[in-house]
Length: 284
Ligand code: GUN
Image 1: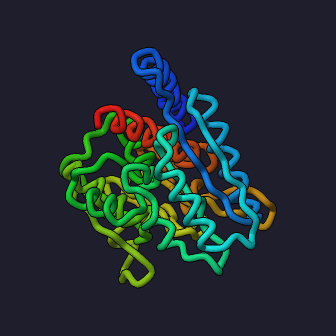
Image 2: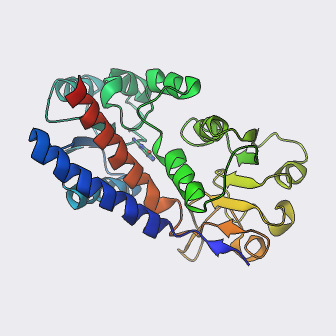
């Protein structure tokens, strides 16, 4: 029987800490951390994420601006907005919700964001800083995963950690953050041979591949910590992760549920990065 890692609870703790820090920052310097979120077009999932980011800001006392731009927004208009926000002292963090409509160049937008305001940690400067272990911002989902692993009280040092998935947003930075905590890290992906053999070595298994219920009990070592980054919608409309909870839970020591595991952490980590950006702006 595994202990369930409660992402809602850990996320609420992070937000309580942020609320207190916001108040302290305001009393000392008269500054509130400010986040600008840009969304282009009508993608329903993106709209929900952006609304939740706006609510998250309000909850911890941040200043926020949301730019809801029409689908036909041009690259020039979008870059002009990023440029304006780069120069705005009220704004410490800028996030452009992805995916963008096809006619827009995501990479160009990421490159245009001042790395000091890049609270997604998507800019190559920040990606590079994560690589060398000298970073201000951690990418939100991997940072949330680290916080959940830390909440178990288990020391990561020397552990066999296996990450399934090699995306730029989750798998690759996740492996790097685990490495910085002195884990022995393996990254698996769609071309990995004998996947179950590799995953069965994992003391800590992080799964981010986007395939419903993909990891089953026979792929997991007895007593492993299992973190499920997946968010898949089943035919009946219910959310499910990349881990088959029913068969994995009896073998794991700790496991994250879906929903209620990694999901609630990501916006809290975004808010944490925005707080860091505001503090960095004061120091400068
Ligand atoms: N779309 C899905 N996840 C993310 C994220 O973490 N950041 C941004 N900017 N867009 C996303």
